[in-house]
Image (cartoon, rainbow, N blue to C red):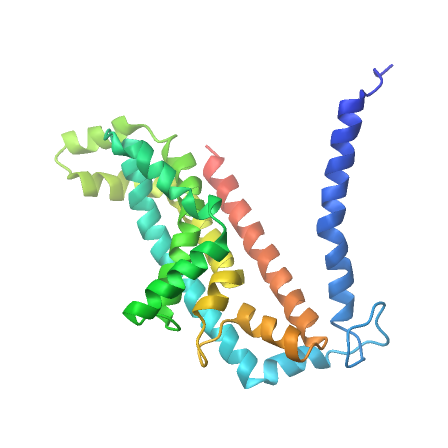
Length: 264
């Protein structure tokens, strides 16, 4: 006979199911509303239509906001991957006393509220003329996504034997060549996984984008917030459904890459 579950296990299980319900229930409500025929949000929806998806793809403003978010997310993923790889290598292989300080600074964007970061970046970018520009978006989003890239790569780099690089350098390779031809192929799946995480975080980032968006340069999250305030229609659930599908696809891809990196 199985021993009876204690109160702690029951409480933990209840908390897990509550969190799952908190995540799943909004999805169950949002996705059906995107197919409703009404011009306003209603649940359960009346009828079935794809006109809100068609309106999204036919709208020049929505396409422009989506294209801007895609550009920013793609460039952010590249910048965060390059900088994150170099930073991770310095942290894992370095022997400087500043490594600990660097690690503390690195997790700052996770600890500090994004609203505080957004206000600081807005004031700074207004001074140097980067507010409302693609380089400004990319720089800000790189700061926000860098910790996630570093944590993803560091887990893989920590498992790579440093003696492999030493052996390559003993054969005449430079440190960069040893990293490029020995270490980089071993951590490449985790690097790609970190880049995917950076892409999705940047694409969905609302707070900093809201502060940095200009009159013409508006990311998709900023455009969605404006429509929620001024003209709330089922096009918002339609876009949210597309974002859910995109996020799930990217997360599954990242999980597949991480699983591949763990396979001997």
